[in-house]
Image: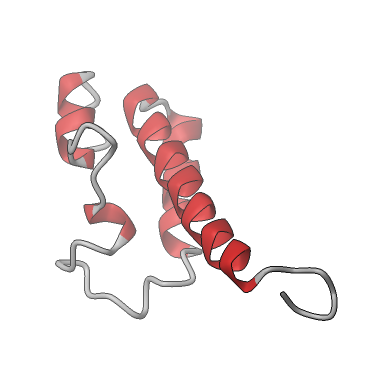
Length: 86
């Protein structure tokens, strides 16, 4: 524990929670697929701070993450008939 009362273990957990929330939001926007949601998706992808760390083919890139059911973004978009997202 640091002198500020922050556990370094919790900092790592917060990053995992933040990534899970970002992924959940990403999949929610994909499943809705409206024009506002597409704009929000573009914003999420363009402003993802890790987007420069991973190539677009890397599974850790936001566009390649899988949800808790191991489904890909393109699968969710197609499942909900959101061809404009695909």
